[in-house]
Image (cartoon, rainbow, N blue to C red; front, side, top):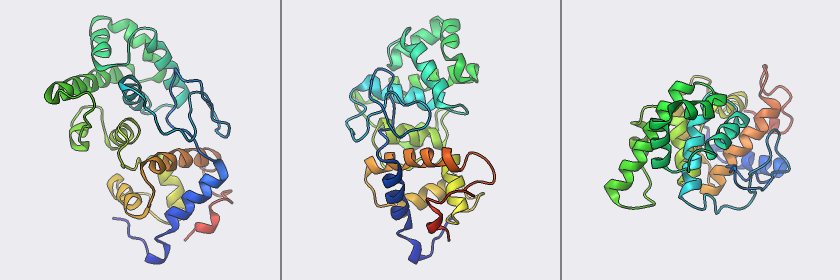
Length: 248
């Protein structure tokens, strides 16, 4: 896995501080029924809640994150937001409502999420995750049980990134979510290699970043915001004056 020279050990914390200073609090994850805004973000700015870490506030918001984590696979957030708005007119954001509607009204369900792409696959994945949460609740008879990462990964349609998204944002667990942007930035800066495994990069962050779970959420959001500006086109990072001082 990724090993980092001890003299650079603190750099993950310093990079976080620099990004936070540059872009401020991101208020990730956005909710469709919430009218907060994020003033520094590029792209969609509604539904965010900077510095308010009380989200998700209820089980419906929690499941909205779960649904969004699956819909966002291989697509951009605005199309997910559209799909969530469409679904919101048809169903409640709870596992039973999703499952029953998808089973009994497959065409309207698919039409609602079509804008997020991969419609047959994502319909199946959403049914799978709904079933998973229904079983979880029945097993434990608890409203608020946190699934294990291992169990989530056993659900067809849930890979590493989606599992960490669900755990970090829906269940407020300290799991670092690694995405393509994370890889681009930290490969450019020299901390990881392009072909490092997901788990080794995740482990690198979780070992060296000293933030709490709120800061784990913030770090992911800041990485996305920064990467949209400097790492969306090759050669990645070439104009990144902000983090250049941390190159090793």
